[in-house]
Structure formats: structure tokens, C-alpha cells
Image (cartoon, rainbow, N blue to C red):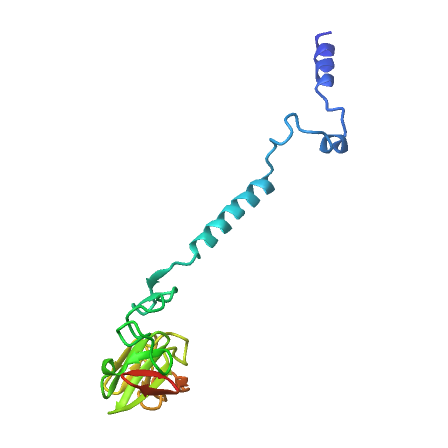
Length: 185
């Protein structure tokens, strides 16, 4: 008899619903069931949000070659290369540099340009973006414009590569002297 009671007990523990009935059953607390897929999607979304936040922009920072830059231009009338230093705009257009700041046989980097004076009174301007891998050049010395990334060097007179992996010249921008300023021609 005792064995019969145990077997009757076992029978009551047997699942009587089919898998289809179990899968369509509503959770006891709607909206609280967490699935592995839901947790993984939430974690992935949080990770993506963190990556995008890290890629935000800044109004002032340091360029990869160590030079400071700003993505917000100076206001009109401010002192600097955009005017003659007195708050007046350059007569022939926007000044790229003050001629006195560009040494003979050398140059300066202003904005997106390298402005050089290969010989007295002759001014040239080239893109500061190296034609090899797109890095910014960062130095003008001994008649050479240098790129720090792979050591390409360019002529201050023509922008042509003189050494390094670069094979194309820096893009030239025509400039002229207008009073004390160098302006786009």
C-alpha cells in the first residue's frame, strides 16, 4: 500500500501541460521577465552610447602633432593674422600672415597653411597636410618643411618632396604681399 501512495504522489508531480502551452503562458509579473537577449541588447546599447560620447567634439584641444588648435574662429576685429594688428581688416582681403613673421629661408604654419619665404620678398603658401598619409607638417627648418609621422620633407620653394615616403608635392595656394600682410592672391 505504501508503494501505491508513493506512486500516486509521483503522478501528481508529472507535468500535464504541453511545451506549446508553456511557451505562450504570460509571466506572473508582466514587464519584469529578463531574457538573455534583452540583457545583451541593453549592455550593447550602453557600450555604443559610451563610445559615441567619447567621440564628442571639443572647442579647443591639442592636435596630434602637439600644436594647439580651435574649431571656433576668432571674432571679427580681433588682433592676429586676420588683420593688421590694429583691428582693421587687411586691405586686399583676409591676411594669412604678417610678412614680418615669416623668416627669409624659412616659414610659419598658420591655420591650414605653411607660409614660406624662400628668398627675400617672395612668399609661398602650401597645405600643411602631408601628401603621404595625411598628417600635419609641424616644422620648417633649413629650407625644409617636415612631417613628423614618417619623416617626409618638402621644399619651402616648390612644396615638392625632397625626402621620405611622400611622392607628391604639398598643394600650393597662390599668395601675394599686400602692405605688411600676406594674403591669398
